[in-house]
Structures are given as structure tokens and as C-alpha cells.
Length: 229
Image (cartoon, rainbow, N blue to C red; front, side, top):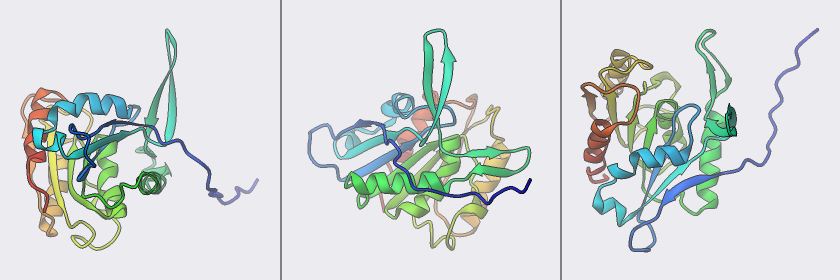
């Protein structure tokens, strides 16, 4: 039996997001986009990082933490819990079953529909959301800073010339005990971006693993305090 070529179709996808609006109710002057890890949710990502928002951003920025486009139901004692994914990668074959382009288009069209696409934007990506973030940033247009937590930087997958496609900071936060993503792989991939002319910094957090804890939050808060270029 001969396999047919994959057919791609356009279909509606729900865009659900947890958010924090500017404290004074004024229109936001910038956007903070949080991208969760594999089999996680935007609400959980926002809960973990809300305390990392500096006071000045709480008054001026809209923080948006969407669910990924791909639903991943998990059976629990209470029924089913909904978690989400941004893409599907098989490390055994080094191939994508579904690559990152769907999520990039998903985010871009959602921000356009919400009237947020032209706001100066910071992205915070954790784990799978961190792997996605530089590719998404290249497709969103107004990104000024990307903070990756517990991820590598897939330099060869970033579309466009570097640093031309990345006119923003790329800051990295990685736990020294991260059991899911190698510290050295993260550090070397970030260093490669710096050697190509991208601005940014790498922060190794002693004693932290593959999670967002108080020490990780503290570094993220410091990085969010850097004024946008």
C-alpha cells in the first residue's frame, strides 16, 4: 500500500489563555507572552510566574499565557484533565510528527485577532515552550526580549538570517540540576547565538531542576526589569 502525501487543511482552533491586565485598567503598552511546557497549561504557567512580574510591568503590560493548540487529555481519579502541547517531536527518529509552524501561525493569528500584534512583546518560554519561542519570535514581528527557561536554542531551525531575524535579547535561565534538558547543551546553544551577534545573557541557577521555583523566578524578575530596546 502506498502512503498518500500529507494533506494540510485550515480549521478553527480554540485560543484559550490565562491573563493579567494592567493594574490600573489602562490600555497595555506592551505584551508579555508566556509559553508553557509539554503537557501543561497556560494557567499553570501564569500561576508559576506571576510573582516574577516587576511592579512597573504590572502597571503597563498585558500578560497572556495561552494553551498550546494540541489538546492532550489525561485520565485522573476525577475524570479527565486537559493539558496541551505546542508540537510533536520524536527524539528517537529526530523527526517532527507535527512541527512548530502550526503553533507559530496559531499565535500570530490569535494576537492579530485580539489587536495585540503590534505591541512590543516579551516572550517567556519554559521547556517545550522555550524550544518554540525563538522560532515563534521570528514569526511574530514585535518581539524585544525572549527569556528561555529549561530549554535549548534550536539555532538551525530559526527562520531568516541571524541576527537579522532576532533583533532582540535572548536571555537564558537554566537549573544546574535540570534532569530533562542538559545544562551544557543549553549553554552551548545559547553561546552559539551570542557568537552570531545576538544580545543576551545565560544564567545557571544552582540547585534548581527542570521546574520553575523561587530561585528561577527571581532571575526571571531581574531579566524582565531590563528596559526594552
